[in-house]
View (cartoon, rainbow, N blue to C red):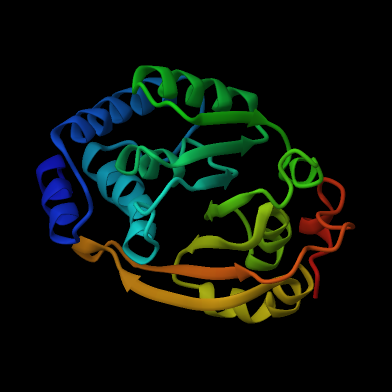
Length: 239
């Protein structure tokens, strides 16, 4: 997917793309390629693949959630090179973005990206999601919490649901094997105060594979013991 095809697909889907936003995506690609030579941000670096499998894939969340109505806060857990939150911020400048990532080099890249793209309202934290979710400043404070290809659903739920406010939504972006993951995560989701709204399956353009966007509404407060200490959710998922 070249930039022209990317723009055309966004327009077809009714997403608010402009020439200024296209220029930001172009600069994003340049910085991603440049930094990826120094630190391992992504295995996907070819222009057409980045536009399809990173930029467009990240923006598919906007096909099922209306980010344009009012000012919303979004926390992106384990964002890596900024996906999905930075493409969403470019597309919806009113979004207030918080990114938490455990690797400081990635945070440095995102800080450079934020400055180079002129993005206001992007807050970066070098922390483990487990610690971050127990911080009273952030716990239960976000309208949306996103995670893209970070961990299994049972683990992700423990990292993400504590950060969503009651009435907020956890948006999990997964690949083709999401059905079984979701089945295995039912107890974790319920325990953490979540309720499955929908598992939306769709195909990326150009036969780039099946994707799932799983929407989980936060209907109850998460018990105080969650998230557990760093590493525990992964070693001993709620089952």
